[in-house]
Image 1 (cartoon, rainbow, N blue to C red):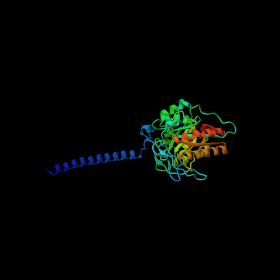
Image 2 (image 1 turned 60 degrees about the vertical axis):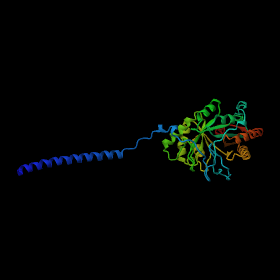
Image 3 (image 1 turned 90 degrees about the vertical axis):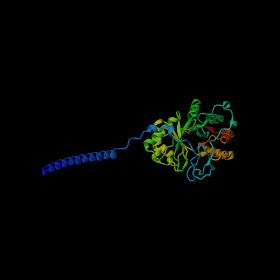
Image 4 (image 1 turned 180 degrees about the vertical axis):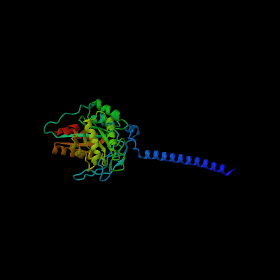
Length: 341
């Protein structure tokens, strides 16, 4: 081949190679630009519609550990309590199956209407909040046989929550949403629990979803919550939802570090707090002693609030003790009565 032809061939090949190199550079630049834009793009907003109850875990154990909790859930036997002067009761849980209602507690149809209404001037007022409802309408039937005003507190995502709420609503009884909150212990607070890891938006949405599951509730009290109830930022979000819906707050005081009652008062949310737990120990004699402590506080302060559970031992003990208390001039009122004070 002549030299001139070889030179022309090499020149053409060089031009084609140059175009290929330029095209490759353009493609690499475009790919780099696309990757950079993807990395810099903000993450998508959370979809609160995925917070459905079908995705929530089932309820479990209690909210107790030494130096932490002072009450148990419906799926754990309340622990043996050790009173601490000036502070809450500290204890350890003992797992047990959910409390069952004793068929011998009485015929609901035989129960009279509660002794309701505002207490007479000078009469000590007692409010009893019954926690951990939502698994059985029979528990409500049994409690009604006591014939006094009670405040029923219903867990939002239990197996019979809808039926229990319907029964309470139809009977015109006062009830609360028993709002699950994160404890300091490793025990699962149950379905729909509010957690410190949630953003303010997610915490607010989860609070609303729990309230929607207990329609018609007059207020809220916390289920567990030794961690979350002690966190002012988290409780501010929760109480804002209560204020928005015109609900009151009962601080269950599951930890001495709770900010719930104080913060509710500061924010203008109607509130009260628990003074006594009746059945941390299900021994009837110990329940009786706790009940007498409740009456002593009511006599001293004009009113007092206790939290109890729908255990057969609790109902049987209250049946005798309530009659005696009423004969001594005590009046049983719903929690809203104490909030109004």
